[in-house]
Each structure stands twice: as structure tokens, then as C-alpha cells.
Amino acid sequence: MQSFVIEGGHPLQGTIRPQGAKNEALQVISATLLTKETVVIENIPKILDVTNLILLLMDMGVDVAKRGANTYSFCAANINEKYLETKEFVKKCSALRGSVLMIGPLLTRLGKAVVAKPGGDKIGRRRLDTHFLGFKNLGASFRHNDENDTFEIHAPGDKRLKGAYTLLDEASVTGTANVIMAAVLAEGTTTIYNAACEPYIQQLCRMLNKMGAKISGISSNLLTIEGVEELHGTDHMVLPDMIEVGSFIGMAAMVGKGIRIENVSIKNLGNIVDTFRRLGIRIEEVDDDLFIPEQHHYLVESFIDGTIMTISDAPWPGLTPDLISVLLVVATQARGSVLFHQKMFESRLFFVDKLIDMGAQIILCDPHRAVVVGHDHQKKLRAQRMTSPDIRAGIALLIAALSAEGTSTIANIAQIDRGYENIEARLNALGAHITRTK
Image (cartoon, rainbow, N blue to C red; front, top):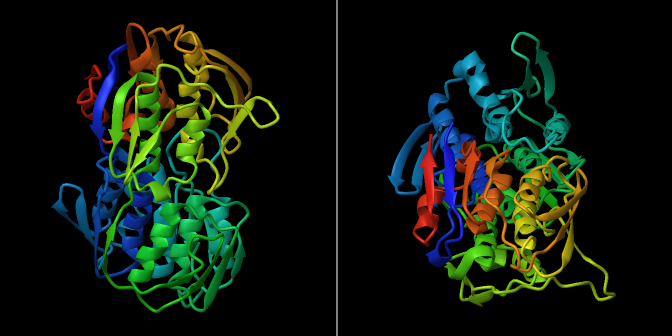
């Protein structure tokens, strides 16, 4: 197991560029399974989850070629269907949560798919009911395989799904993406209501339309998909990762002496920037860059009636739950108090006990709510030995360690590597002192 050793107290300064969006990359790479023609995708991040998905596609018979530093071509003309029935395939899928996004493409193209319990972050229950119910509405049937504890999903007898009206039980991003990919080759028209409408879902829909799909209602929660016989190849550019942008804003607020974040695609950040401003963080928008000057103090806003600021997550265009951990750490050095309400995952706030050990003033009210009383930079956090429970808590603990007095250690950094590309080298270039050790 690898760890980060972080010498805190070193200010960061300079320019950094966000990687390609992890969540979008997992979706559009999976969508290459929908066609026999070549799809070229640019700005793919070099992170563990994406790399493992690409390797899994290669094992399945997909011809993958590296065209540039972050550009790959995918040609799924010859999928090895027998491999999809092996224990090796099931084992690899169970270790990679992103593999769940292959179900829709495989089901609609091949007429069958296998579902293993996916791996990923330990942030509470992450059910797949939305995916299953969506496939069932399109005519799929399910059978549990007791031998390897998997579900086998089959299209109707003619191997083609049937378009239908679908009301998703929740606005799940991966659930929406899976049903969209299953519906594009289905017979007839599919309507998806209560669809997730994040920028990455919009990007997936636009790429599929360039491949020949007929999707309307993009950017809304009501999508209409007219099924087509086949899709063809295309080129696609992945957006910058909004979660990494938010993480860099948090680092700049805590330990920055002036940091510019380049090419962030401001129009696709939603209310991320404004949420940091609620904590008092000064952020300047310059063209498509963000500049965060040194923050000697930042004062938490209150609501118009004077009540305590509450920050909560919600489906898009609400605040992404992936940034609650970062915002919470930033609040530990604010002037004022703030209540964080993590609504969408029940275990994501449990990492705050590490911050409390570091000297942060946090009251964990229940699995979903925490009150942070800021130190206003009058009292620094203390260095600690910690373990990363998931990607976002891991980066939040890294930010805390960068601002702390002394040397901290964060174990299980494979969790951080799943979502952040070469993070220690990029931060060390700004002035951080981070060492990777075994």
C-alpha cells in the first residue's frame, strides 16, 4: 500500500490545469462499445479508474490505440463475447465501479450483459435499482447466477430492446447514462423523465448524436430518444473535471499565495464557484480561467435573515456531492460557522473524525450533517497519520495536511489515484512538499 508524506505549511503559487473529467470519460469510453467503427476521444485523464476501464475493454477485444498524451482511439468491431462469460471478467468488473456503465451498451448491442457487484468508494449504499428498472422498462429480463453471484440480463427474444416511457426512481447520473446508451439502439422511442442532466450527461448525449443517435431534450430532465439501427464513429473532447477544479479552489483558499486554474470551462461549473464564495473565498474569473488570490481571512456569509449558512448537495444543477468534503475542510479555517448537509450518501462525512484529531472544530450531528466552526487562521491544524476512505475524502485530507503544522501521512492513496492524475507532482510544482512512499 502506498502513502503520501506531506510536509505542511508550504504555500502554493503558480498555474495549474485541470485534467479531463473522470465521470465523463468513464461514460464516453463505455459508449464506444455501441459501434463497430472507430471513436477517438481526447483529454482522457490518466487516472486509475479510467486506465482500468480501458484495460478491461482491451481484454474484451476492443482495439485501443494511443494517439497522443491523453488521446485514444477505440474500435469495438470484434468484441469477444465468450470472455464476457468468464470468471476473470466478472472479477475485474467487481473491482471497478465504472464497469457498470458497460451494461447498457453491451445489452443493446449484443442482447445480453452480466452484472457483478461493482467496487468503488466506501461512501454508503450505492444501489443499481435505477439501472435495472430502466433496462426492465426497455424489455430486458434478469436471472441471478448463484454460481458466481452475478445477474445476467437479456434483451427480448429478437435481441432488440423496445423503446418505452421511463420514469427514473432517482436522478442517478450513471443510471441515466446507462439507460440512454441502452435506448439509442432500441426499437421505437424512449422517453426518460427525471433524468440526470449534469454537463457530463449532456456531453454523452452530444457525442451519441454525432455518432448517429437521435436524442432531444439535452440539458433537461426529460430526454426523448428515437432508436436507430446502428451508430458510427466520431471524435470527442472530454470536458475539464469540475471536481478537480473545486479541489484546486479549496487548496488555493487554504494554502495559496495566488493560484490560477486554467481552462476550467466556467459555463459548465454550475454553482461551484458561487458556493466557495459563500464561504468568503475571493475568486476572479479571467476569460475561461479562475484566479484565487491569497486569502488572509475569509468570512462565511449568512442568509438574508441572519441564520447560519447551510451548504448541501443536490442533483444538478445543485451542488455536486463530490465537493462537500473539500468545502468542509476549507470551512475549518473560515471566520464563522457553517452547517454541511450531505444528503445523497450516508457515509461520506465519517472522515471528519480525522479532521477533529487535527484540531478542527467540527460537530458531527449524524451521518448526513456536520457543523464546522472556523478557526479564521488563528489556530492551524495539526499533522496526523490518516487513511483515505474514498477519492473525495482523500483529497480533502490532503488539503488539510498541506495546511497543517508538521508532517502528515495519508495511507491508501490508491483511492486518490483513482480520481486525480499525478497529483503529487502537479502540486509539488506549485510549492507543495509531498512524497509518495510504500
